[in-house]
Length: 559
Image (cartoon, rainbow, N blue to C red; front, side, top):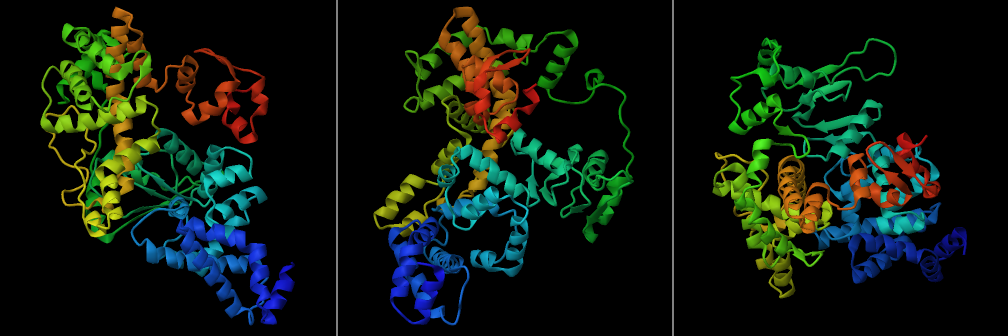
């Protein structure tokens, strides 16, 4: 039945209006409510209340289109019910969708305000006008109807990854980004390029901009000025200006709080003389012993580019105290030719990895170093066994916040005990080795499990992977297991070495990683690769099956 006919029934006060409305739009209304509430009974109540709300407002209202009017009533009622039921919980597709948008539009006191604020609506409407039809439909279905990524992938006949990337790029077109040192390298490069192209309107950043990153803005606002080196401060304020694409002299502005002016002036006016000497030639730079050892090895040609270690270190890793531990570790991490996740022998695995690390350092680990090292090894082993970054974060969150025990208590009717259950101890990232390091938990003692900040878990996991595992431990353990393979021809050692360094033992995937492709890109690109080595990539006929987005990702390799 046409919308106009249904509205006529409402004006006639005919109960048939509700029946016809349910027939035509009941499925859409139910989906919107369920995506927010994640509960069948609450969804039914919400939809029925929406029908009642429609009955009470038509007349005098005469909405056009009717669908948008009804959907807005359903959504508003569902959001109110959502807050009543889940004030501090996060359990629906709606949570995820809102997380994706939280930095793109102005925030306000509540979710209702965010969806109903006139100014926000104006911004969104103006933004939607800039999108093509397909991306506009995708954006609205995701953030208005709260459709899941999987549902959108089916609707548009593409992969979940493609939908996620397109939505991410659409959000970026809003012009608001976040930049910090714990972001993955790929994400940082995308944001920096995004800003250089003039798309970024606002960037919330940490002191990472002190590194002189090429991200030009009209204005740099220093909300919290902290004294630093003169050159670092000049790099930071140097982000202001150069944002125009026109061939004219450009300038920017720097804004500080009044109470920071004297400190800023003191740092800015300090003379900063650049040294003409290489760090390799400076003998009194007072760095740690390992740094001096590396510096000397580079100067004398005793540094291995293959392993990123000194030849002296490599010799230590060939000692009997190392080669007797390696086969024990391999036995625990393999069953025949298959990898196993060594949960049952976790303590022994940690102890053996610690033993190898102690041989490398030439000393015992402090208690604080052990806590950090064990966290790093657990993350590294998860990564070796193919767990995604998201899954690793979930595992760490579930452990520290006592998810399983809280659920058990809640099901047993002991919700109060569940809500007051404290966090478990987990070590946060710190740079090791560091004999002066003091042990500290990622979350303070007394923090309740339900109050654990998931974002903090995410950033801490990034730091472990990027700064400790990626830059230090992966090279060390790759060298240990690869050298053992060369000496004893144990194929398990070679496989583990490759998994630690690259996350795979497939030679094609390893070369693709070395070319800079992510595992997500490798998943759809690998079938198109005929051959790959250090000189070139050759693609086969499957390349013609890629969509425009995928082809644009590899445009630099196509001739």
